[in-house]
Image (cartoon, rainbow, N blue to C red; front, side, top):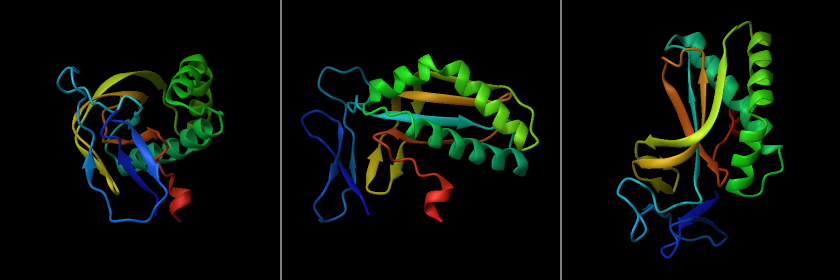
Amino acid sequence: MQKYEISERTGTVRHLFSHGLPLRRAVEPAAGQRPGRPGGAGILRFHIQAVSNSAADQKIKLEVRDFLLERLSACGAETKQQLLDYVDKEKGLLEQETETFLQSLGASCAVDIRTGSSRFPSKAYGDLVLPAGVYDAVQVTIGEGAGHNWWCVLYPPLCVPAAAVQ
């Protein structure tokens, strides 16, 4: 199991190569930062909102998740900023490819992909705990985006597509 910790000095996530006790640490705001803004400036969240709460739309949301995680992991970005730059530059292509993918599943929905800041609730990812607050994010809205959402940490890469879990 991979372990991560939050740097006390910088508030960024780093991978632990040693095998120690499980960590349950949260990102604390850095001195001088405004409340609600995490100190983990190196963190990029990934947020996908489904068309609706129907079982079919929720399944499609997870298919889109896997599709986009594969595309984004293949882009060659090695930093959060490179990943943000890639998404901003390729936004139109990513939306078009995702809509084509949806059509292959029998769904016809518009897809909106954008980068920006968004408020997220507190969330535990294994041994990493991120407090509620405002994070930089890649946000994906399928159709009207009226359904339940899904999120993870896109950078550093803590998102796991369903295929990798099986």
